[in-house]
Length: 119
Image 1 (cartoon, helix red, strand yellow):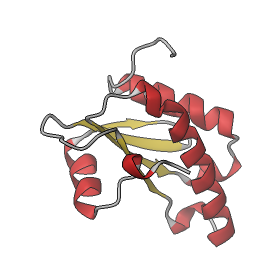
Image 2 (cartoon, one colour; image 1 turned 180 degrees about the vertical axis):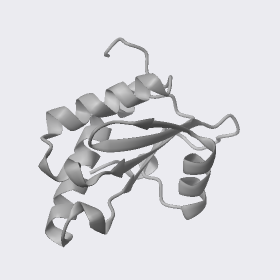
Image 3 (spheres, helix red, strand yellow; image 1 turned 180 degrees about the horizontal axis):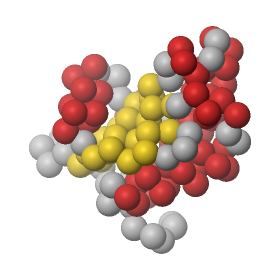
């Protein structure tokens, strides 16, 4: 589970990140990333979107758990002003966590929120 300070909960945050952020598509996920300059809150925020197209309730929750685990592994590499929305595509249902993490890191590098090094 993501720590409370790293969870995106407000729909306005989701909307601003999706509409004003950079979009980076991967085979199993789409990442919308944005760096907020006016952020006073501590820590980067991550939000998940797992629609019904991914599968039934059990499959969606399994994908969400995997994505939360993957997002937790990159939190330390992000700036406190970063906002990220990860949207699961239907193929994410069959992806393993290592592949999802690799795709998330590639997407964040494309959005220029991560450098190539790993901490």
